[in-house]
Image (cartoon, rainbow, N blue to C red):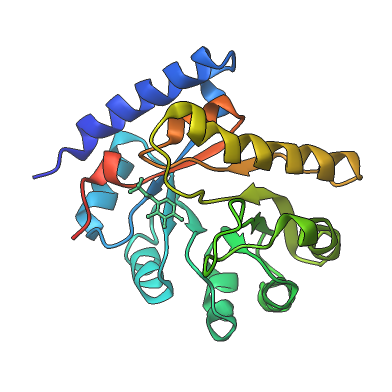
Amino acid sequence: MIRVTENFRIIQDLLANAALDAGRPAKSVCLLAVSKRKPLEAILEALAAGQRDFGENFVQEGLAKIEETANNDIIWHFIGHLQANKSRPVAEHFHWVHTVDRLKIAQRLSRQRPYYADDLNICIQVNIDREEGKSGVMVEDLAELAHAIAPLPRLRLRGLMCIPAVQETLEEQRKPFAKLRKELEALTKSGLNLDTLSMGMTADYAAAIHEGATIVRIGTALFGKRE
Ligand SMILES: *Cc1c(COP(=O)(O)O)cnc(C)c1O
């Protein structure tokens, strides 16, 4: 049995300490609980402990969990690779999408977001380490994409997201996160109103917080290893 409640408290402390270490307010980092491939009971336990933001990678699995927890006040984040033909249910049922990396997907989400819902929060995924076969826009194409997405109706462009290559040391882990922060600063200077850096997971959250992460996406440390 994984002790989600206990893990939740431990992680909250770790995140708060990492923030203080970085000279940031403890509350400036939002914990996104990544519940992919974990059962509903795990989500309910985290929810009971006080967690509100949950992240899912797969459309069908996410939709099922959203339906099963409909009576709760959960903020749902889509953090997986999004295929164009599956954008509609994501536009209809999630509050955030962290993985937009091309205009076509943003345009579809904009068209498909229901008029009665709040604007859908969007992060652009950046392929920060220029890895082959990895999702994300390359930095040289980022500004054009961001300025094309920002004016789309029913979307609110919030910031940037990345999943860097695995590094062993804190110092190496910080480099790609620092790069993403600089990209966000450049976009802000160019007139966009952005406030979100979605970066850092179980293995590298401390490095990400040092470089300004506002959302860290934590799965394993909270729910245990995935099958
Ligand atoms: C699975 C996943 C996570 C969580 O990873 P852990 O190492 O289990 O904390 C975070 N972000 C994305 C995009 C993921 O797919």
